Image (cartoon, rainbow, N blue to C red; front, top):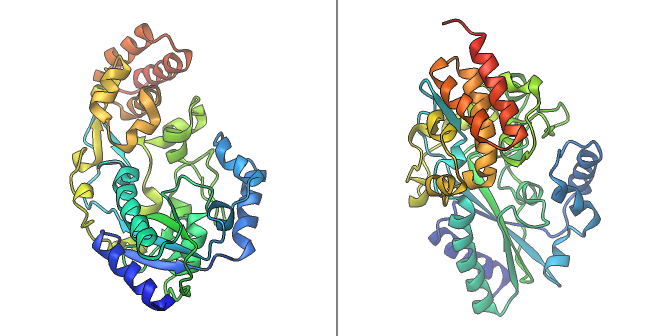
Length: 349
């Protein structure tokens, strides 16, 4: 079987498993990607995500993951749910990717089957990652022609806009690489930059995580800077503004994978009362088990809920915030709750 025939077989199997986009990247890609990453880390714009900084001291080439690696298979999965995510009073907004089952679980199960297919059919090595390994997924996805890296730093595809999850399989199979023939681009559009409430998107096509609402509400384990709290608005977990305003996302279509059709949080919102009233990790686990929201933990979600409550203007939340101050043996949580109480107390009746 020729390399092209093997590639065709892999693409067919990948499509059967539910992968919407499948392309092959060359192992060696332009140094600009690594240079941008190093510059971003050096500027401290990764915030407290120290694991990203550690990757600078590690080899981030596919050959170090799979000895003799010759090909990198990039896959994209449409996750758009198409629901109305404007929150009613007293609720917080959830990023589109987090309203269903955790995508790591959904995609990993399919990657495992595709990798096994490669290993068993051709006695080849195959190692897969869903944004968990030392691989610059977006760089390889752009090199392979999945899409292009937009101003908002998301991969933007011709088929689904930026509503795609990325994953990779590194293999020692020799597969013909695809060229990037993407015909769309950002042009002069800068809506994502102009509409980001915290000014997190830089002019050089990178993001300052320290200002990004997604980082602040998910990866950030410490306090949310006071000067950014009002700018968070109703975002309780993550943020989609830079994707919502992107013209390329106007052609988005609902995800076909059943796991991404089952909404754990209809309309992409969660009542603030439900979060503020959570007293134990067990309660948090019971409500959010199996979803990406587990990443923030109860402490993070409670912190976020205090900020969103403070921005809500809903004074009926005051008793719940005062209860947080009384019951939580956590200086950070008490401080955020006090801030929210002050914000609500300063608003009109």
